[in-house]
Image (cartoon, rainbow, N blue to C red; front, side, top):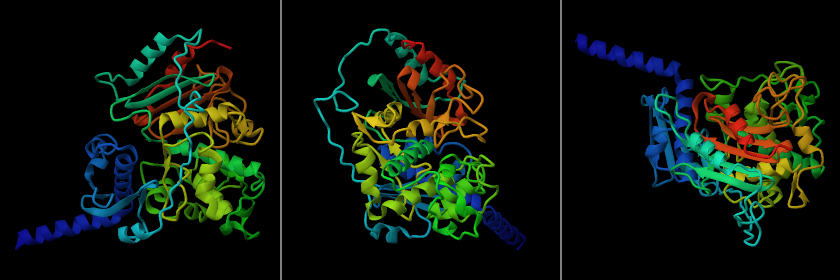
Length: 456
């Protein structure tokens, strides 16, 4: 009898702990299900590799994650609790389900970005598909090769670098590219927060079309009441993370960011519901919510033309074909985090900004947009512009990478995803991988690469 009492007490205790810990468990199981689904279906990887790498560290080791190839889904739970499912649709990537069942979601009309880029075989990359064997005088190719060896080589006893792709472009020409096993030049790789910089580009295009004014109040329906202090928040303040909206960008516990990404079906609506923490422009706080609110604004303005607009005005003009940009359940692109593209295509996006928003003679971004995007935000505690990281602050230079030029700006994402843009050296450097705790050592990486090129 005592044995049964003790067994019952243990079950009750475990259940109580699970209920209390449910918010954390939902985030863990959602993160695991979403990543397993996306890595397998977007990048064509083996489930065992994803389980070992992306999901192989504590506390994710407490989870049970499995793939169902019969219905293109992945499911996760933690200690048997908080079951979550992500569903893949061709061309759309994976969506983590919150308000829909798997059957309901699959019945919804597909909404992929129809990539319409046309290959031009007669032109050199990035405008075509040719890669001429041209040797540029003054470039130290042998040293560059050694730098790549180091970037991809693991050292016993040190944390893994897990570099998966590097592309270096100098003066519009690809100088070098290298990939690890499981990845090749066409494999879409996760950008995480580099997605934010592509939201910047889409906003810029709407500005050039005179459909948005960055200094006017953001068209957010929930803020339209003039008695609501949020109604004065501008597009500029959302791009610069200085809106004053209450936010916590913490991935080690339940927070605004994790609740939005892994427990909300409409991420823009979630962000729009949050109160002001401080007057706009009085406080800088990095916020993935701002990016998803901007993504919803882009959708709102372009309406039924939304996904066609994204391809027609940006990706197809750059000849980009590898992009998979995942949505939340509301059908809005997750502008903070979930864009996938090959390193070559991430490099093309970097080249667009290196060339002041002009691509093959056509102006894609409005004149002055790149300067605006790379101008320091006054209250930022780190070098930050308008959805781009900067290597300088308002009154200081070379704050992130002291051995790189002050004019460098970059797209940056979780686990050390980077697109570095260095106008003064005519360089775009892409590095993708899965490195924990910002361990890669980018300052030395950049310093060594810069030494291989002529100094202007």
